[in-house]
Length: 61
Image 1 (tube, one colour):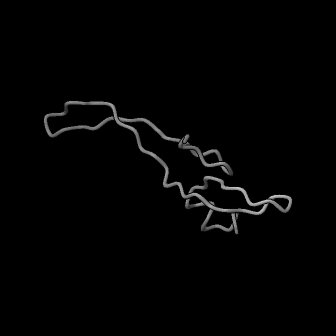
Image 2: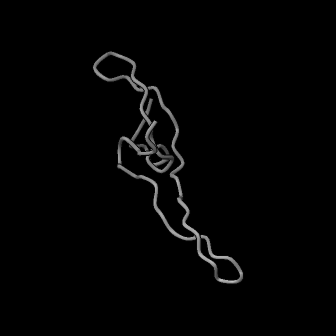
């Protein structure tokens, strides 16, 4: 499963963990994705949607 919102295209972003000694290691932040059942042309389909699209009403059941 790819970690991409099917509505807005939000995907993981990269950055660094920074320790107290200022050592840096790479890390990723994943979007909060939820699977949602949506009716498309009379058929039920599962889509992956971020919570911002879900909350703003861009995706609905």
